[in-house]
Length: 426
Image (cartoon, rainbow, N blue to C red; front, side):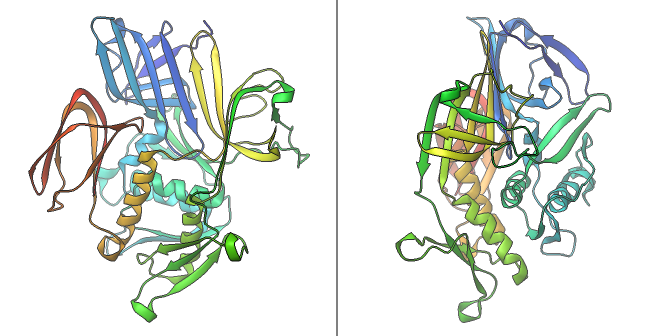
């Protein structure tokens, strides 16, 4: 078996053990969001595969264990979780004391790192500080953005800013210094349209990809947005922001409620970030054959490459990589758009509601995060109503449970097995 030694440490960076005889293992890397991993091992590793411990192949591929299932009959353990970026979703963007919003106008990298510093590194409330986390040196990359945020999920906000700027982000291990390091990532342009970097072309005819599936989807595509700021009726500020100059039948309009934004010069950046959620989906899912272009040598996650297929020749970003370790290591990639999951769509809707504080932007909502795996979730939501509820596990899969409404502010949900995840109430 083409194996990699998998190490387990705790949050204090103490080495708990190595695993080489795993039964199966996969690890998903995404350019701009936390993704899942899963490992199946013999039951002898029960003492080190614990909730909250960290599993890693190398310093760039580390994840937090969020769910552990023990099969006593088969004598195996299945551990699941998400990569180290997932620690960022434990924070909201809390405005500074005395201000309604946390506002900044700077380069995209400065904006991204500003919100991480304010909410994870040097927050006003010391209880919010993540001691193990630090931010890499700011290189002030990207165009100037005007941004403001208020009680949004930090990971989702970073994803929105990165989408606008064309960046990714990562959290990696510094074992020697016992730190998690946050940084902004730029992919390398390896397309045939440039001559600075080595070029990478993926194509069936070159025998370097197989099992290809192509998706073109315009269902949610919007070409322009009417972004509305503060005010009421005719006094409300409304700006038009265009992705392109399409007219007639080709013009697709979107209304963007941005009443949480107090300054008109920030409306355009909000609109462009929202339009990116409604882009034309062009996606290619393929298995890479490590022959003429070697993963992590000739190309890597986030790089721009050239794709040749029956649809023509296009430049695509390597948006997601799944590493599967079984008999041999298999590399599966997504080029272009990553199709949003149910959990992604729910998160986007909830963040939009949070940004405007409810009211005319939407009904009250609440997200319960179940950090420790449990078969019974006790949810106190304080919404003063009997909300609808959607449950997703730590991998973003929807789960159905037995829901019991105790009163208008409390719910108990029971499942057949214990797991961690989130409950979205609306």
